[in-house]
Length: 303
Picture 1: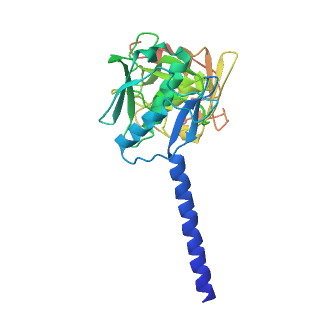
Picture 2: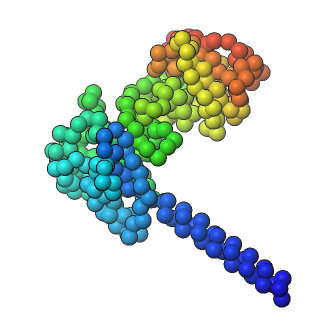
Picture 3: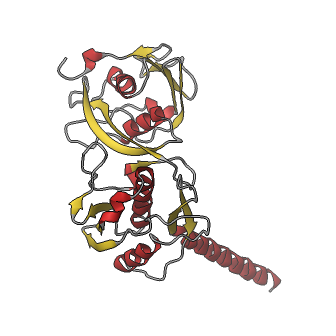
């Protein structure tokens, strides 16, 4: 009987522990976002909503955009900014704001935009957010339409704080369908000022192409162990997954997708690639990585 009692007690403790973990996970599932007092970061605080369905959650989170839970913080939307309407269709939420939104300081507006996207895309049935102002398309400083924004639109540091963002439109080089040539894909995004641009570039290459007719050059399981720059030489350290064979894509195409992209987008003239910190690697038994690679225009499509 004592043994049974111990088993029952352990079972009960296990259930309680599991329930505690589930409760903790549930509490951490949602956050509300606001700006710090200096309006240089987006802060996150755990939030337990009352609503359960997507539309109810969206309506509830809408109210949080104009409120800061921190007395020293600032709400995402500045005073005077109002929401004209909110519409959810095909997992895309559109917020139409009044003209006061465009009067916000540009740096604050970018942070507000990031916070708004984070706020609504944490809801399961919302994958993207669009913003219009009095029915007109929101535009970037260069005049291009902002369009749909997802969590992938904003590349940030690993902490809970979202810092100042920089906007970039860059050409990433992936493989063409032959696996022997490089073809560019333009990608526009915002990235945290705390993240080196060179790292952002490599991580975007790992995510692969978004356009048809292009092949990924780096296995998606690849982890970035480190990226640094010294004297215009970019040192890229990847884990062992980088060496996995990708069908159709030649080893030279893989390496120069990294090299040509970095030397095009960043202030870099040469690139050295290492695997788990080791440069003395014969990549796929073909290409020695123990060297400084320079841009190779001959591999670009059309050359």
